[in-house]
Amino acid sequence: MDVELIRNRLHSGFRPFTLYLSDGRKYDVPHPEFIMVTRRSVVVANERGLVDILDPLHIVSIKELEPGQQPD
Image (cartoon, rainbow, N blue to C red; front, top):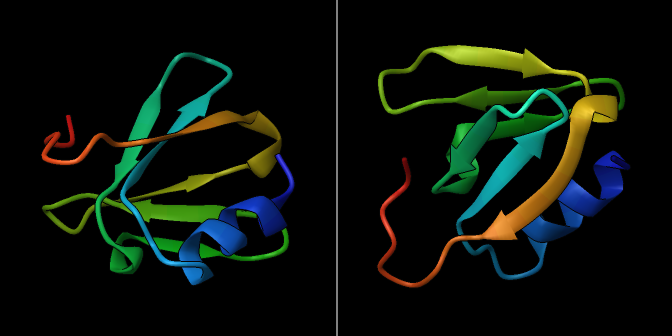
């Protein structure tokens, strides 16, 4: 996935979303502080502060969380 698409979601009226990867994993992003986007990687943190570094090539879709929906 083009990292600019993710950056646009962060800077144009943020709404919580989930990133889906090619291997079936998913990462909830409930707030902009939980994600950092560089040219070659996407870093996602969870509630405990643990991070995963993702290759944007493996991000296949983004789905907005429904209002009131709790992240997994």
